[in-house]
Image (cartoon, rainbow, N blue to C red):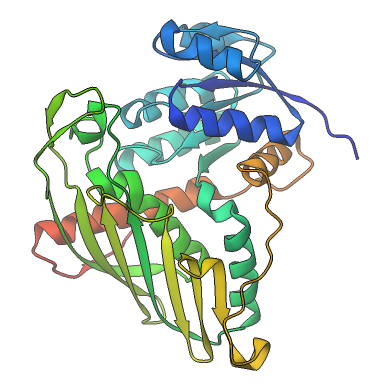
Length: 345
């Protein structure tokens, strides 16, 4: 069935904008009208590479365009709140890069602005749309490994070396928890259940580092954190976050342990491996996955909601819950690992 094409503007000219441009192209239903960023030097070549007809540095002009129905906000973290509220006031559907804002309060202001204008607001959590995560969710719902007894999540990279803003507290107040941890938190919420309490430790392991171009910078934020989450049913989940691992992990690593088996995602066993003797016999099962084009599943879902031929997802409310967990992690770490209840209304 043919779907209506949607006029889209992408705000931001960095690495994550490339992901969104590729994902939008893969859907076959988005007309990206303009790529808008802070400098023409960034956006002009990127627009040319993805066949976007116009590059701009004028956000206000972009949001005023009548041929733009929806915007992707893929700009530095500290700009998210102001840009998302401006886009909502302009009547545009929004796909907002994570983290949605620097605080729960900021996230709530974005939600309120979108609700006032009646526009669709989504927050981008790419990992939940990966083929292995979709299948893992189905198997967990089917009880393939039985009741979940515990899990271990890891988000680790060497850290972004292309911009100093990642390491400034005014831009990324919660450091590695904002940048990487929110991905793992979202998967915990999606796959395992609600987090009701947190105990955490955090530190800055590398207080001074060099960017790719050789510029030395002082690191103002935490670059390592470890949290234990207690879910509503009492299950304990550990979450390790690092921006100082030379090798890192493949976007994330998740091990889930149940009464009747185990499930590993993005490990040395492959994208998804399941040990569930009652279902697959006495061997690890590594299923063939469909290899959906990177970003297509997420952007298909977003555009379907914008067009009204699919459900609008609840990612914004879920992101607000995730941000409450981020704040609980930082609060617990500041109190030497004391248990902190996650509360949000």
